Amino acid sequence: LDAPGHTNPSGSKKPPKGSSKGVRDDIEQEDELESYMRFMEENPHLGLVADDEEEIYEYDAEGNIFGTEKKASMIDPLPPVDHSMINYAPFAKNFYVEHADISSLDESGVEELRQKLGLRVSGPSPLRPVCAFGHLGFDEPLMEAIRKAGYTKPTPIQAQAVPVALAGRDVIGIGKTGSGKTAAFLWPMIIHIMDQPPLKLGDGPIGVICAPTRELAQQIYTEAKKLAKVYNLTVICAYGGGSLWEQQKACEAGCEILICTPGRLIDLVKKKSTNLRRTTYLVFDEADKMFNLGFGKCCTLRM
Image (cartoon, rainbow, N blue to C red; front, side, top):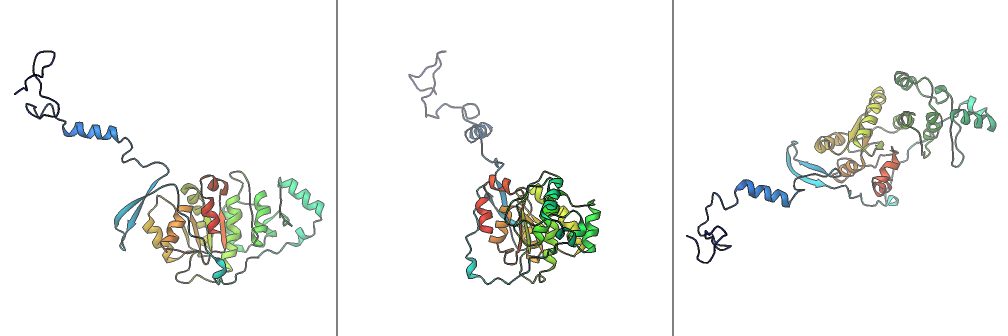
């Protein structure tokens, strides 16, 4: 029945607002679809994962997912470490012996070689570049792998950076894509790892390579696997978006080389799936991009 005193322009009477009296449920009230559409209009971003976020899955001992959490672009860094309180085992890091052909060059000859290679070098007492693989003293298995990769002589960045890395010194290398930067840090890494004591149960990786994106990490992994296979070394690639549980299990089994994105490395260390106590060779590939993405603090704490 219509309430008295409430009429519409057509003359029919209408119940007062808030009253359900005389309302047909199938017409006047909001149905499920209308309710859903109104809710989605009021919450347009519900259920969407932004590009800078990823879902992290939690697994039980058998690998079954039992929960998820959302990880934002702001990564909680590892807590600072007081290295003075830790007794690290000594390790060798200088494996470079300058070849007689390079030692015999005078300063003008060294400068001429750098100009020929298009090199610009700075830093205290930089080592001289080489011009042939024979000057680096690599063993035959590594040289065979290098030949299979298509190299006939060192590229300019390899000619200068490899001797410095073999000598155990810090290096910042800048070169274009395709200049051979990846090999320039992988070859010395293999030499370094082969001289270290074998891994024991619970040891973390000896060589760690951090890359800003999963795509770059996978590219480095492909190249590293070819070299590591020669020496029976284990390489693991860990990055956000991959199975955290599988990466945890792989790291717990042990590896000599870990290639990872910064956020995933922090996840693995926090979950005690790996540690950096044995890490003596560290690479930040495309470090400028890593700092631009906001990983600077994470990288500093890791060093």
